[in-house]
Length: 314
Image (cartoon, rainbow, N blue to C red; front, side, top):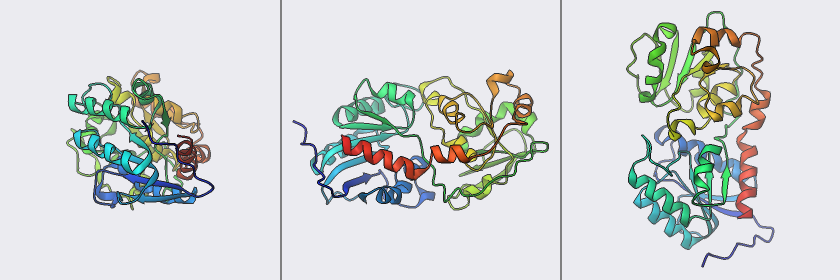
C-alpha cells in the first residue's frame, strides 16, 4: 500500500531534495543538478516550502530525487519512500528507451523508478510522453532561470557578430560542419576547449561568470541533430540562457526551442533556411530581441510556485 497523502494543515510543505552528489558547488556538479535542484532551494523556500538538501534524517511530505538512474538510484528511491509521504523522480533526459545516452541498465532502472515514484518531474513534453507509459502523474517543468543572476541585457551587433556556444565540450562537435562560417568569430564557453577544425575563442565555464561571458556575444549559434529521443527531447536551457539576456538565437528546431520561441521572437531555425547559417543570420535582422516575455515565462520563482502546487496535490 502507498503511504497516506500528507495533510499540511496550513504549515509549510516539508520538502527534501536529494542529488547524487556530495558537493553544493555549482561549478562541480552536473548542470542538471544546479539548474533543477541547487538553484531551486531559495525560490522553493520563498514559495512557502521547508526545504532540506540530502538530509535523510528527517521526515518529509515529499522527497524529490534528481538525476540518478542506475541500481543505486533505485535503492535510494526505495529508502526515500520510508521517510516521505510521496516520492518524485526528476529527470532531464528520456531514459525510458535505449539511445546513445541510455544503456540497458539505465532504461531498466528508469522504468523501475517510475513505477516506485508517486510522480515524475521532467523538462520537456517529449520526455513526458515517454514517462507516462510508466507513471501517469507527470509534471513538465522546463529548466528555469534565476533572473537575478542573469540580470544583464545585451546590445547585439548582427552586422559583425561574435557567435556564442556553451555546453559540454564533446557536444561542440555539432559546430564542426559550420567551420567556414564560424571561423574566428565564435566564443565557446565550456569546461574544456573542444577539438574543432577552425579558430575560436575559449572561456572556461564558471557559474559566477557565465552570464557575463554570454553578454560578449551578439548571437547564439546552437546546431543540433534531432536523430534520437535524447537529442529531440533536450531542454531549452542552452538557448534560454542567451534569450533571457536578449541575445538572438540561431538553432535547430528542437521542440523545446520552438516552445521558447513563443516568448522570444529573435530565434532563427536553420531548417527554415536550407541549413544556410548566413541566411539564418539575415533572418534575425528586424526581429525583436526584447527578453521581457521569455524572462517572465521561465523565471525560477514562477516555477518554484508551480512546482509546489503540483507537489502539494500529489
